[in-house]
Length: 341
Image (cartoon, rainbow, N blue to C red; front, side):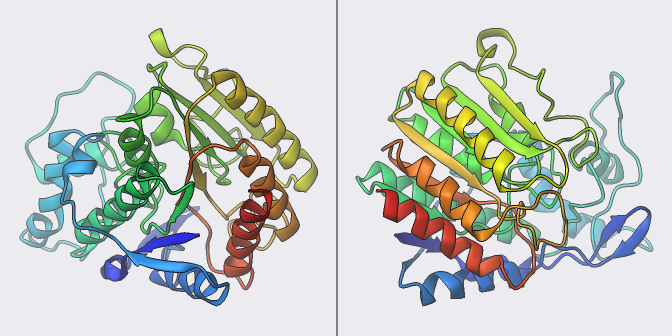
């Protein structure tokens, strides 16, 4: 399988993450991508570099105000008196009607959903490169390759059209789906990350041409909390084109694979001509975030079920954090996919 990668991700190395009010280093570290790359190389997969597209692919999904903010935030923040090295908002517009602010501190609160997406001097360059990885892999599929894997970092599925969150800035999965949609009438997205892909859901929530399906730890007790519940089925023309399959926290292979069967049945009914997989490996039993308990064999089996659909498929890397199994789980998924082809 062709693996698309850019080493530009390394300039984004977030230092700030809050867990129950305690500040610590972010779990979203550059080593994630280098471990995944090494595992893919060792398994014999072909590595190709990302093409340079600029902000065009991202602009097809994200708003101009948001893209402008991401590009200038770190530089303008550094000019503020007594500012931290990373952009971290301390005020948000919350649930009520609000007006877009002029002040950078206000813009940060508007465009950053939580404290898990600090913006540093290299964040925009890394996020842009990650979106270019997704666009390059999408173009490979459009050019006739049956499958490709976009080794994206930072991840993207928590990013809305105008808001970062949960380690994510540009929504690589949505960017890939939007690019495929240019040539395919119907595109399906299946998100198997341990966290619900709330940004992806939000971007396509009122559209009938992109089906969004997510299997994830139940947000009643797990991030992102506010989105990812079973009753969220789409709005307007998109009603019925969003399916959430939340799993009890701590669930293992059995329930996860059964949810996969339900997801794939809905995808068959939708009858897309292209498929995007938001490949989170953080559902692993050894992942430090401990949401689900999926084994390497479970990843292998899920990949085989997905491949059996026979669709042109783009795998987009989302979560999956530092553990000894991270690279092994990627290899298990890729081998399960290829064996079923």
